[in-house]
Length: 425
Ligand code: AMP
Ligand code: GLY
Image (cartoon, rainbow, N blue to C red):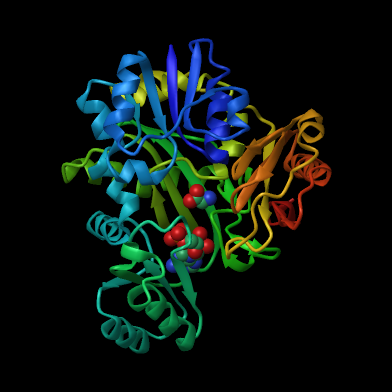
């Protein structure tokens, strides 16, 4: 079969890498892809309109389209493909609202008794500020809409919290995504990412993972899309796993069906493991990035039948056969210096092949571009250097071995990926 993958990041490179291993797959196309993806898939341009892409997919006999990022999902790409009888993996527009509106997600959680931080939503800056004065800090101030993982501002002091409201509601730093803000209490604990595939009825959990959202070591600096990840995340014990499935995952998926928005695709639950149990920090409607870079290498089974089963509503029939490798995986993101603030692009990258040649290491491309015979930086997160080994300690060490042979001007990476998990050993 022919497959089309939508996206151009590290997550999509990992996805294409995994899909390419399936004996069912004859050819993979990626729109728009990146130079890493181009080594295993045919890149095609991403047209302005989804209808154009769907027509192309129909004419090329694409049997499955897999949508990587949240923005096209929220804009209804799956609806456009489905209307033409084409199979596309991911939630439709109404279901993707679970990620596209934090206020919608909060309402769903409150209605279904799903544990999460206490919150209120505001469109008026003065009312938001009055609420903060009333309830005290620390709080988290969040743009309601999609902001590439950057629309969340911690307000540890009044000054910070009030400034965050101004940034989002008045200065419109995140554009329309900041037409309203969700203000919530701070949750204390350790974070983990919980990924499930669902056909709207059955939920198939992936192995656990954890990412590092802050830009600098010790979880300091600014919030980013993610600076590294590892799997398994030892904070998710078997008991916690069952608790999350029963009190969070199923109530969410069933709650979406109850309101006429059945959810099919990936449900990514960002969790805080608090003293009072797991609570939801956020929902995403797609694979995590960089979590995907550590999850797909650990998946032993063919991914294609699982994705197709989500669309067809037959996921439960496949669940018993899913197999995982016992090895651990770690991914270190190499970013452009300055990210998530403005940064330079166009820096020549060297050492990619040497890093890839290290046993167990895969270098997934994100913000890269082909410039003549060079590969150059072209984004904030540039590469995800991923390794698999017998145990997290070795996986992390090997990923850093890969990082150390890759060079580009002003490269930035965290040196402490996985530190929480290693502290548990
Ligand atoms: P989000 O995009 O909502 O996941 O937020 C980004 C990051 O901000 C999360 O991964 C957490 O590290 C942090 N965060 C968001 N909300 C809270 C909260 N209520 N309490 C503590 N940390 C939070
Ligand atoms: N790594 C966090 C995310 O994908 O949203």
